Every structure is written in C-alpha cells, then in structure tokens.
Length: 196
Image 1 (cartoon, helix red, strand yellow):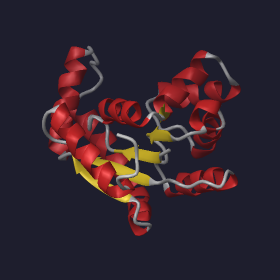
Image 2 (cartoon, rainbow, N blue to C red; image 1 turned 180 degrees about the vertical axis):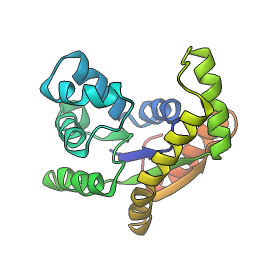
Image 3 (cartoon, one colour; image 1 turned 135 degrees about the vertical axis):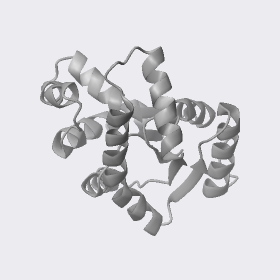
C-alpha cells in the first residue's frame, strides 16, 4: 500500500509514468485534471465553480481544489493507496492534504519529482501543441505557464524535501529508461518489502 505524490511540470511525462506506477503497485491514479473534468462534466457545484477558472486558463483556487481532492480521496478505490498527480501545488494545499490524511491516520510515503530541463519541456509542449492543434500554445504562453508552475511548486518540493520524502528522477530519455529510473527510485525509497 503506497500513498504517494508524483510531481513535475507540464510535459515532464507524469501521466505516462503514473500509469506504469499504478499498474505495478495496484494503486489508483488521482489526477487533479481528471477530477476537474469529472466535476465539470457532471455539473457538480464544485465543477461549476471551477469551470470559469479552467476556461480562462487559470489555476483553480485552493478551496475549490481542496474540496474536490478530499471528496476523491474519500472514495473506496483510494482506501488502499493512491498516486496523486497535480496536487498539492502550494504550501497551503500541502497543509490541507496533511489534515485529510491525518484524519484517517495516514501520511504520504514518498514524493517523486520528475525533473526535466525547462527548454526541453518547451520543445516537448510545442511539439504536442502542433500534433493536438493547440494554436494558443505558443512558446511564450508555455514559458509563462512554466514560470508560474515553478513559482508555486518550489515551496511544495522544499517542504517535502525537509521531511525527507522527496526523491528526484531525471525525466529525459526514452519512456522505458525513465520508467526504470522511477522504479529503482521507488524501490530504494520505499524498501524491498513492496510488491513488484
């Protein structure tokens, strides 16, 4: 049973690695992007509140995000472990997540950060923008989004680093090479007692 956070900027390959980790360890992947889309699609009160921010390309405020994450973590499939992707993104969200987990007598086991050079990320996202016909994703917009991401998450990685939970993995190379580095890092961090 693992409770973990996967962190990394847009384009770092978190989604790909998340699916491999969850399959290997039999835990559910919880992506804030998926939570937002589900709530918006189902027209929940939280979804409607978040929709205006999402449509404007802005981060959804902490209170809305926190409530959505809490609701998702209370579902039965998250009881035996989970991988969080995209949350927490701020120091305030870290504190809220601590409270959610402490209420159930739990805490995070590991925070895995996928590290990629920012210019490589811009290159990847521009390539993705072309293939997915995202005409609004210019280099300038992508760099702005990156700057905001790093500005917000530096405090998160610093907090988890102080707690000894943070493990960094290089995200450059073939998907399988990155996956091997991720797997090795998790085995080292969590110990050999975990199922393979």
